[in-house]
Amino acid sequence: MHWAASKGYAHIVENLLHAGADATRQSSDGATALYRAAAAGHDVVIDILLRNGVNPKVKANDGGTALQRAAWRGHLSIAKKLLQAGSDATVVNNDGWTALHFSAYAGHYDIAELLNQHPGTAYQEDSSTGNMDTMGLFEHLIRLHPRDCTLQRALGNEFLRRKMYVEAKSAFDKSVLVAIEDLEIGSITDLMHHGIRCDDCAQVLRGKCYKCTHCPWNYDACERCFAAHLHRAQDAIMIPSEAFRPPGNAMQK
Image (cartoon, rainbow, N blue to C red; front, side, top):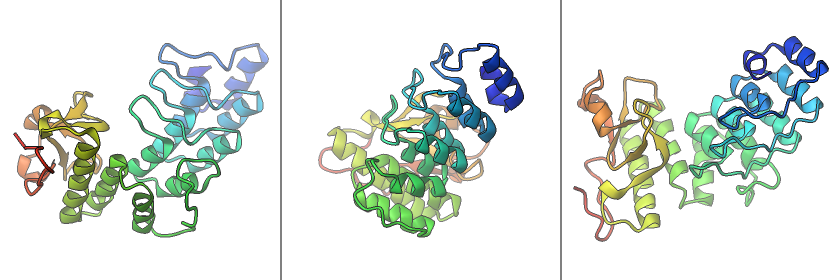
């Protein structure tokens, strides 16, 4: 069932259901067939599973949901279907991320706008975003949630994608500043970047990290992995930047 759902083989999914397969069965990582279909973007499979009563609110072991997977992969139509079926956009995974964080960080702004306007979300204080441009949406979200370092970092990603490197550095520095103040830490080396993992070693990023300007725009790397990276350090944005000034007694080492 999981394999067929992930491949989009709708007729096989239907045959398995008719034969008595359990569509709610979770794998060792806690994922469901719905979770896998949402990540892969298979609308027809999603329709079949939801029609057969699959609960869209089920969490995987990492606390993630099918809606979060759809948001991360940019599947707008599936995000709409899951919300209509009762998915909770406010669910936070084990790294503290919501579906909105995933959509904003990956650059899927149509989904970010959808989630921001959906009734009952944590981002519903002002839903008047109606078709504003990408940067306008970011400014709106950050104005609503100035202490959200993940949204600040997502803004940096958008600037980086547009090759606006000065602005990107400023946004990334702001995300670090917010994180330091919220965590009340005394050193950059103590900083754990909220839910961000190194794309090479998969460890949660701590201290200084890097964004390569030649690799895919949302590439993240720790210092150790970037030292072995095929592109030069001069071709990267360091987070925080050399211009960063830590607050209070937070000193760079």
